[in-house]
Image (tube, rainbow, N blue to C red):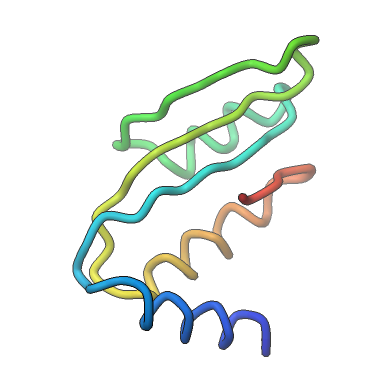
Length: 85
């Protein structure tokens, strides 16, 4: 929980809300549909890894607050093997 509080404080220092926030995720290819389900309605940029086992996902979302950023990170953390950058 301390890490999330630190992230929230950093986001509040570095960003003005509401505003755009760039998310990057690396997800196992077999979990891509799960991530797309959680991010439906957003334009995703997909880039497969060299061997196709992983997919890099980039998207920009206008967030109302730093808490919305944290909420999205917590939401996608339920996907096995996902990495948030």
